[in-house]
Length: 385
Image (tube, rainbow, N blue to C red; front, side, top):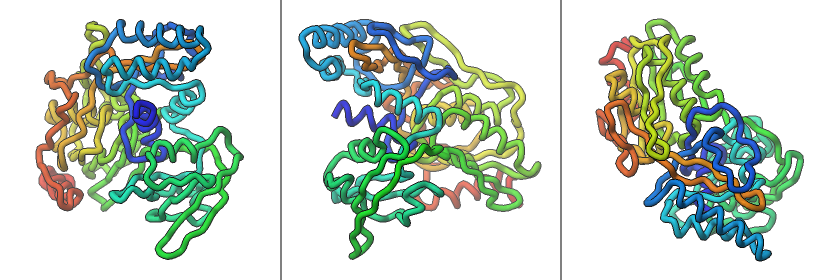
């Protein structure tokens, strides 16, 4: 479960509808970490904890080192130590998994271009196929069931394990997937490729309404949101769709906030008790009508953005309560090249609201036809005619 939760955090914006971790606003890619080093200056992430900070890092580091000295798995020992710590979203990655993690945050991944989710009856279903990717070129469609991967049965197995098997190790490698569509079952050989995650999509619903859909805050996504707002017709309102947004880089969420705020506070956070603050740039469009769509899949960095726009009276939020994830993690290098990510603090909205375990309640709670309700609200704000 610990490994499965960790992989779910890594790959949500890439292939599965699950949770993704968040990072403080560092732009550099995490480098390899020396054993025992705490990478506070590199790439802190978000998570949950019942106990955190330096003691947990010491326990996990010691467990990994002792296991390696005894000829045992340092990664496994670290996972067990994290489990004992009570850090709910603490995670341990081996070297390859951590490289995949950082690639995903950079907005790219090696895979076949499938998003999958587990159905109520335990099957694995394709929820989205990336345009131009290997799966799309082979004719795979959303709604198909993924039954096997290289003859490994995907039925009743964690989605994260299926994702890991789909990704593989290198572009150009092959994977055989078993698929089902209605009564038809077949096998398809797909070649893996390096793909972009396509986390920002812009659609002009009318001359007066532009919808910006952000599925994760990977590197560069914040500036793509700003560019979309700048290109929108002068009199158009914006629907910012953060439903199902799995989080990502907090710095990118702050950049996105800068598209709508004329400077000012976006969030505060603490790391080992030291308080810090995040501010928007002062060149945003603070007058354009704005409605934000949210739901239970709106997580972490997306919640941080939503909370800032709501607290500062900049947007009307429509939909359902968000996930409720707002704590800070940092990576620590372990013996054997693994990396542990452990919780060290929490985020708060401009008014001081904590998000952890609480989420954000929308201004207009709706579960039926939220997009239509959002359009109506935007019309009332002057965003449509």
